[in-house]
Image (cartoon, rainbow, N blue to C red):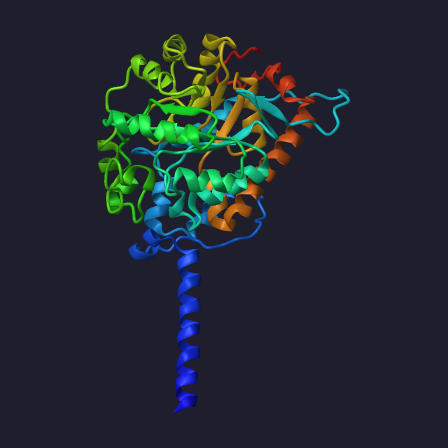
Length: 403
């Protein structure tokens, strides 16, 4: 009898240990939903960033993958974000004496190891159980800036702790609840976030056909808004956006400026006039982006509008750029066209899915190495040298002159 009791006791202890391990590796929201995000934790080999998407598709559940990878309607603008970089060429330069180029730079007083930061993107928990906390750890190890979405699937505190003091920015979707807006900005400032990113290109959600076909609902909570603003678990992105402020004006930039001592970056600028309006309203930086092609299909590629916006801004404030960055040459071309730094969104999430925080580091390491290769072949020693570089337009008509 004693032997049976002993065996039962040992069995119960083993079951308890297994249960605790599962709890530690799977957030409650994911476990309860039955949604199984990746648990991988390893460095990954990156041959090209485009290939990461194909690999991630094999391990992220289909609804979550389509939410991450998809764009608006036909996704032509999303695809054009990448192909637009092919419309200009980099002049190879030789006899320049360039050796081991320096990719370090700074933005808004923050020194970073390369001119590539993490863009704010919702619900990293769809890709990996560590969610944004895992991404933040990887971005910190890469020596750059983590941008955190209002719709993150980790709390602002969890993400700040995971970053270990590395620079982080908080991206704000204005809510119809003014008290919520002030409270979450105050929380970000208390936790040590270094800037507020005000997104202005999403008063409503884009028509994302993949999510409609999948009848996609978030299988996990978005904790930074779920308790104070809306229910998010089991809701589609349309319902989440329904709680957002639909009317956004220059006054809202001034209002956010009044909430914080932090720099306010205005994200989603796609027209030179809007850049001017934002600067006059107090923007400390302009973020050129078409939301990764997820909002208005039929709009230009973000890279196509960057030079005109850069001319309008005329170095009065820094310019951040995203939408379509996949290679070192894309980083180079964006900086040569007026950006101070660029941001990547989907590649970070794919790296997270494939390797956890170590996979995120691998993605940034690859882009840094690729950028250094391009800089060497283009004869540029520093990021400032890239800014002085003139690109050559690819001939698309009968006559095509050099810039």
